[in-house]
Length: 334
Ligand code: ATP
Figure 1 (cartoon, helix red, strand yellow):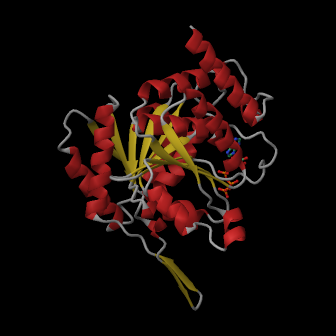
Figure 2: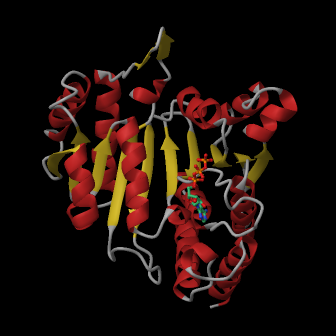
Figure 3: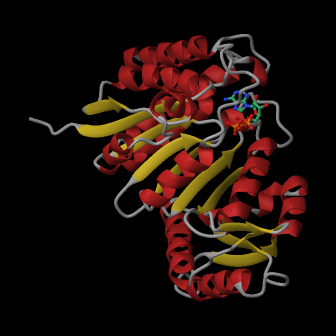
């Protein structure tokens, strides 16, 4: 008997629920040996149970082979940021890749952002007293080294040529200085991969003017959060941007976007980011062929203009997912 992989599914709030339903339709079509365990977290969960991340949800995530996460609203810091810390998923991988048929600022962009996921200003060390507020930025040698190695290993595995470190060590001499110095050291172990660095502000300009100079971007938590939205904007918006959170023991996959209250409930959210996040999960679990099949089906659907309104089409979220399923079935028949 095949042991089924345990996949914890957390739809969350707003469009998280809608895009998750779409991704699940596609995943179930593949008929893989997965057991899907639905768990609650987020704003609605907080209203119902008084906590946005119940202990049972956290425990289920810890016992799973992978977590598939939609999006949560106001409680994001207490849910997704906490989950990343609790599961010690120290690497956040956010690819930004051009899609055939998507009108975007540029074509042929293919960047992977590797963002440190457990340190920096998002650690939550905040204080306020007598009109003064502070947020403490934590960067460690150990944390910097493990994310740097992860980025270079990813570059090797994916046949990529260059790792670019984004930092601001001229101003934040201690924290960014430590991060950059560790990255420089790690780079010496990977002579086959080109290494370079930019200040984060200059990098934002280059990303907008000349995104092709980037291949793998390696950076700290908050800079990574910001540049990944910027990079998503270059290739067609948040509706297309997937991500993976990888640790030594756990892995969680989620779209870069949030719960998008402005479009929630309308059934028009683009399911692509969620479906591509599911594909990253499939690859992580060793189902590479299946992931590529889904990516191709999605690419064709988008190229044919069968999309949600954010990409200029007039399909609903579930209709777009049904198109992907139809393509998969056509592919299976061929
Ligand atoms: P949250 O507070 O949950 O992060 P938000 O609205 O601040 O929500 P996002 O959810 O990331 O942030 O959305 C930012 C913008 O991108 C919104 O205008 C939203 O409509 C759009 N957007 C995000 N995801 C999608 C999607 N899947 N399809 C279409 N548009 C999207």
